[in-house]
Image 1: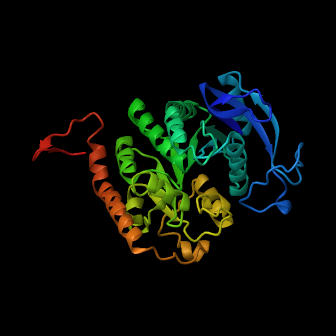
Image 2 (image 1 turned 45 degrees about the horizontal axis):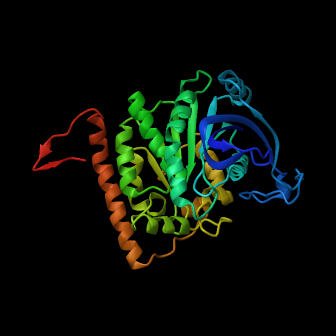
Image 3 (image 1 turned 180 degrees about the vertical axis):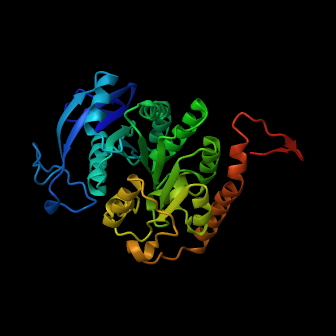
Length: 362
């Protein structure tokens, strides 16, 4: 994989990068070894239990080298591209070390079966559950760098199709970067065809604004949600009890969302290895295969797929009444964005709305 990071390098060859913020974007080429499928479970990362690791049993970093120039990065892509010249950019979430980001992405690429050229964007997360505020600021610190990576990939004649996969807090960073790209280039590049937000840790009101400010020419969004996501439940409490996009039941609005290019996949009952229910998109065999289809560009419209029948997820558990009322308010705000979003986007980002009855439309 190709790895772009805003982390600070370390002197420890076993770590490569820390959770501190670097002064530049570092580009590296990594080769990761994954144990044969007979020795592992789909959806799991098997961490080395000894040094050196055992490739037959453990995930292992076999080789790493610096990309000294843009030409070297282009040569890497030409060597690793598929027939469709596809690239997938992965942006990890909160509480993730450099090594965790590398191995997790390697697992997702392998288990999903995608042959798109894998590019990891890893920002300075400290990998500590108590450093949520620091991580949020670090993602903001890295926003311009992710914008640059997206634009560089889109402007390359060797790249024809870009999928961005973002998890948790990385989904917030991705949405912000796409908003920034749209404002810098007046539109998101057409090569960015698919954006997959898995368990997005984004305030529902902020997401509404991000979508509108991206403009009318947005890529297709796929959102993996779960009403059983305990990590997003904690994030909701930290954020003043405002629902997160990844924790809301968006299924009632699936048809309307599909109309503006957004597919919703509910993973609430998916059987994953994550006790927090925050990584079901990668930990469930059914979900990770579905993810591979989305990366390949296959359509996943709600009318074509019945999740409970074809994916085998089963029924969704009932929510307590207080939480259900909060979620209803959140989905209502998203519904409002759906109804008015297209019209507002067509007005253009440079237009100045008028005052009507003492208010300016926002």
